[in-house]
Length: 514
Image 1 (cartoon, rainbow, N blue to C red):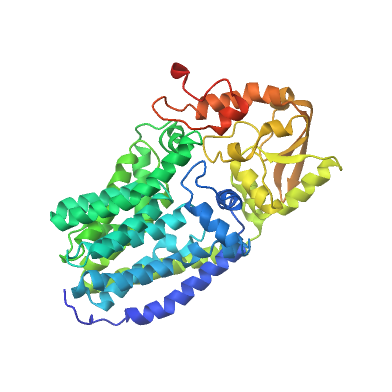
Image 2: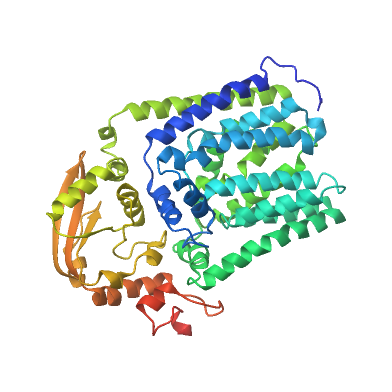
């Protein structure tokens, strides 16, 4: 590969200077006009009461949102880390590649930065989730690791930086383990004593993060373990559909030509470490896809490595054409999103997602109508699922409990809501689906169901008067305990909020160990 300037009609430096502000302006606009989604509002609940851990995942996004919301709660502000992410990662790649592989040259690194900036998900993904800090920490940890492994002399600080960033990734999401495993595979490939010492340094810096999570989980029913490794895998099994869906997801995220070129033999010896850091996690996800659907967002931490590797190994003209395709595909996304935003909400009325769309966009209006339905009586607002409850909580500025069993996902409400405090009170439960009054009568002195329509979408309100905690405990909470709080006997338990509140004489263990 020639270290000099590529012979081309396009200048990557000028393209970066043009496309960074253009894409950033689009993402800022999208973050401003699109209301907070249910998942985002759910994580914002963590930011309202920051802790050392949360039900589903490690605490990092809760800490970030706590810091952000101290200065405001506008969607564009809370989403700023996600809005800036493609730009900052592209600049990091452009800076790092020539310093890791000096023969790369600045222009080749800028082409890599353009691929990162223009990747399909980078165009529209302005949503702030647990993956937001994970992507930052993972990509920067990987780049620091590759810089450290370039040579043994003076590599110590880079190994320390890689380990510290990997610890940040671990405190963001457990999929960081895939990157840690990729470090191990890369060390095996390199076969150098200095790399093994560096790996020990990096892993050693992760230990405090793991210890923190073990300590918090032992005092909180081991919810991270139960959710990530047990409860969320109900119904998982071998399937031919999920691997095909995974392949389609990769084809979208890398684009079809990008994926095709990635799988072809390249002409560059540089950047083999990028191949390890991308292919090892992606292959692990491929294995997981045999039994479970792999979420699109799960892959975002590893795509920049794959795109940077493409930029190092492709022939110069092929690379230029690929960037042109990425730019055109990004422009198509922008046009379609802008066109969709100009359409009236009722355009989507015939889709099965319409009630959720209306709830997301019209939550304040629905809250007003729900209060009017209460007719001046005092009710505690609740909903029947975490996404609805979180959206309503963001709209009204305080927590909304989830009434009923819910699902294995996003059960942080079990920590925030003590149903004993609501005994004898009134609840107003806003739903997107028609309720069966028989499901509510055992838990209230009286039940009234009303229907309302907003923007053509139907919603239902259950007015439950005189909440009967004991009946709710013996029915709903007992089933929740059995399904989602069965802590294995081999895990040490310091405390479990769920059982201590509702079942103090029946520890949260499977029946065989009770």
